[in-house]
Length: 229
Image (cartoon, rainbow, N blue to C red; front, side, top):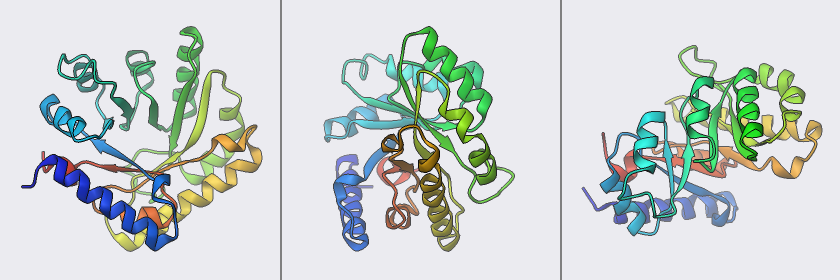
């Protein structure tokens, strides 16, 4: 296997190429290195290669890593990309730059309550189940649109965009990425500040090129950087 530094460089080159194909500025796509289940030593290796944005999915594992002496002083930009239960919010609030996986109004309300209590402003994304698969987390497109006005009124939290995990089939995935972009556009007319709705977190190791073509601003790549777990 190539080094992590070489893998990151390869992914960056592929992002650049996909953006050029799509007529987009490569600076408009951020790479999130998905480091869940990988040790702190590999995260440090990626950081030393110039990468600072990492995504974690499990609360306890994230807390151990952000407090690890190897990583704690590095200035890592942590994103929480996994499913987040309301009772876990208190453990991560103030420690991550962006929460990707809010999928219920009640969870957003708890996030708002905790942010208010801690005098914090918290950015988050709503997870949408664009494939309709029962096994996946996320609001349905219809639920998203029906709850949007309620979500926009919650204090101390800012909705920055949407996130999805697409189908394994690339043709279906591209359709689902397109749907997510359409949903973000549909939210803007009812948002109190549409300029803040800028993020589409979609695309992983196997389908990020399709996601970039459909407007992804963040792609979540783990296997292609760190290898199989």
